[in-house]
Image (cartoon, rainbow, N blue to C red; front, side, top):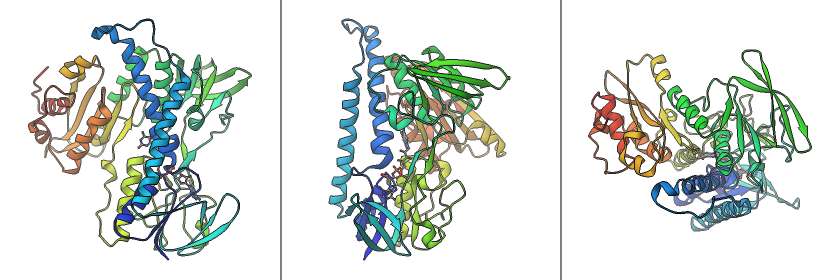
Amino acid sequence: MYDVAIIGSGPGGYAAAIHAGQAGLKTVLIEKQKRLGGTCTLVGCIPTKAMLHSADLIEEIRHAADNGIVVQGNPSVNMGAVLAKKNKVVEQSSNGVSFLMKKNKVTVVTGFGKIAGKGKVEVTAEGGAKQTIEAKNIVIATGSVVREFPGLESDGKVVLNSDQILDLDRVPKSMIVVGAGAVGMEFASVHAAFGAKITIVELMPHLLPIEDEDVSKEMERAYKKRGIDFRLEAKVEKLERLPNGVKATVAKKDGTTEVLEAELLLSAIGRKPVTEGIGLESVGIKTDGRGFIPVSPMMETNVPGIFAIGDAVPTAMLAHLATQEALTCIDFIAGRNPPALKYEQCPGATYSSPEVASVGLTEKAARAKGYDVKVGKFPFSANGKARILGQTTGFVKIVSDTKYDEVLGVHIIGPRATDLIAEACAALRLEATTEDLARTIHPHPTVAEIMGEAAHATLGHPLHI
Ligand code: FAD
């Protein structure tokens, strides 16, 4: 009898397994794929960022001369080598997860896990052999998969989803990207840097529609400057699949239509939880109609002793959140009485060029909540290190509350935004004021100094502008 059985080895499941092992709980991790790590490691965070690094490099090399470095001829992309590098990083990361299972004495069982009653998981191996695992607690960490959109279903040839484009062995001449969320924006960024002509089609009025409006507008300016085209408040109404490409009829809000032609179409519209066929009904676990499993603040389902975390629950689909949910759930199982997660403090990040990251309330959301809002903005163009890097697009925007000076939200677009946001996450966690941020001693010259400057700007006295 195990203390915990975890179904799924993504950043939710494997983090739960490590934490449970460290707590001295007898733990089993069940994974249907041969490799551990889930979406994030195999087809999500890790491979996309490996490719984005190749994209960043070619952009940097194009500007080598600005830094006095002579490059003979024009840099070009060897897609085979880009994929090989990406695959190597994925392999290393997945092997790292396997190593951590051994290190923390977690039993790994390869096979399809299905709940077969309270405290029971039936595992079916590839060849059909079945075994039943008994555990005092079960954690569902089955994650999510690509959601195919009617009419835009992937065919692996001219219409690709986010899994398939990771193995595309050429740079397309042109690509339509449907969806301007993080996934669509990142692939648009990669392939534009590699030389593809990109057109993004987004239903909402802005790129990265959930970000602060100022950030989205800056992103639109930045992508325009990079030659990335986009159609906002628009949707693909009709799609013709040709032998060597697609013809997409795009309907716009003003009632007009436009026909876009491209070699490929990437559908980056969303993902759905993996909760069907895993035996939820055998114990009476309810889903919310969209397939997500509602849980308590301790990640427990409506059935005591059965927990759910990560993309399978109706919270943001992010690896770092899945991991935190895993820690909360295991701490609860181990009787450590953990605090509930503060979801409003979960950062979002888009690793495009420029990068975008944010945490907390947008200016609009803070005003809607009735705060007397104070806003400060500081541009990267006035940051010495950003000028050294030659990356001066963007800004940091702080949204704070006039009454207590508390930081309510931080929104960054520009170099290293996805790293810089960590300071803002700590600030929100500690209920810091903008004065705390302004008085924090930041090392010079760093891009990170911009956080202090943005705080000074919020207080009305920025130094370097
Ligand atoms: P998953 O990672 O989806 O893992 C679930 C695992 O469960 C899988 O291995 C699956 O095989 C297994 N499984 C499912 N059913 C069963 C079963 N019945 N039996 C056994 N095993 C089963 N998030 C970020 O935070 N940062 C990023 O930069 C980022 N980039 C992304 C880029 C892309 C292209 C995509 C698609 C996603 C990205 N994400 C990113 C999201 C992130 O990958 C997910 O939020 C995260 O992987 C969710 O973790 P999880 O543990 O809930 O599930």
